[in-house]
Length: 212
Length: 121
Picture 1 (cartoon, rainbow over the protein chains, first blue to last red):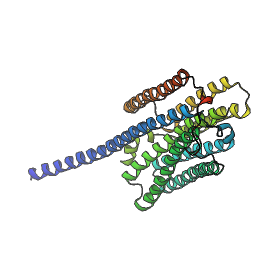
Picture 2: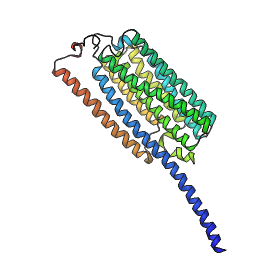
Picture 3: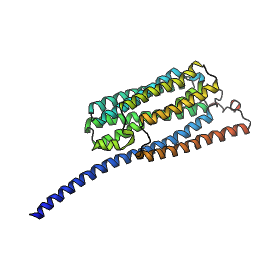
Picture 4: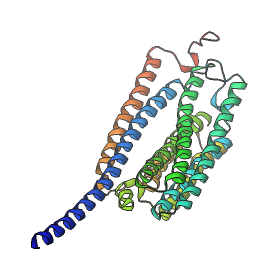
């Protein structure tokens, strides 16, 4: 009899230890994947730094073509900026709803974020198409090649973020807010806020610095 | 358990207040950068200083209010990676601009006088 009691006790303790170790492991793995993703973001920063440096070097090589002052409409840039900025905040609200484990809240805030992000991409694509239509595509000059590479690289990141966001909405609908879905949402929000920071560099270096 | 898991990572510990104050600050800083350029009230040199100073401030606001980087010890490695990246960034951008503009100056080619490539090149 004492043997069994001890056994029961031991099993309980073991189960407790196992459960807490598992929970801790989960928390650690979310923290370490988030840190790994942070390192990816930092390396992406360096990629953008190279594109920014290239742009600055080529920014006056108009080859007789149009300058930024003739091409850019700052009101549209401002609208794009507000659109991306608002999507960053609504993405934050999605994370807050995630903390409260409100599935509906997470999905609706992500949907709002998606729409503002989509608005940004649509405005940018329209700007690119307009520039190409008036003969100011990336082939026109060194300045325009660098412009389309830098701004297009950022826009591509945003578009990939939108695809990711759409997948996450589907995953939440299908699986609910499981631990792995939460961990992915955390990384998506880091990615999204990072793109907003890169955009601050883009509108300052490319648009504002190219116009005044 | 997932609660703790998300809390453990820095980027997930925001509050409505931090997002909203970040939003208001970011909008004000964006306007502070756009208005001098759109209205041309400042000289080009002043405008240059203002837009880049404001951009630096806005990046700090985004890091603090949206990505929630702060002085806490669990974020020591996030900060270390960020500072190292900033160093690399200064080296790449600063170095490339320094070298290329010095090259322009030494070869006596003002940017405006750069030979334009043949059409379609």
